[in-house]
Amino acid sequence: MDAGEAERGPVGAPPGSGSLWELPDGVLVDGHMPVMGGVEAIRAIVSLGEARAPWWRPRLWLVTGEATPRVESEASRAGADGVLCKPVTGALVVSSLLSETA
Image: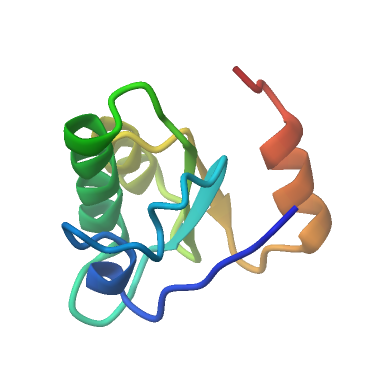
C-alpha cells in the first residue's frame, strides 16, 4: 500500500493537481486543517473526482477528535464513508480500508 500526504485541504484537492489524482483507493482527511476544513475537503475530492474521473470513487474517512453525531452526519452528507476518532492507529486505518470494500 502506498501513502501520500497533503499538508492542507487545497493542496490535496485542487483542480489540475497531480498529487492526489494518482487515484488512491482511500483518503484520510483531517477534520481541522488550515485553509480548508475536512468536510469541505471531502466535498472537493468528491466533486473533482466526479468531474475528472467519474468512474473512480475512493473510500473517504474524516479523522477527528470530535466524532459527534453532528460531525458524523456532516461528513456523511459530504461523501465520507466514515469517521475515525483520534487517536487513530495503523491497525484501525488498515481495518477501515479493508472493511466493506466495493
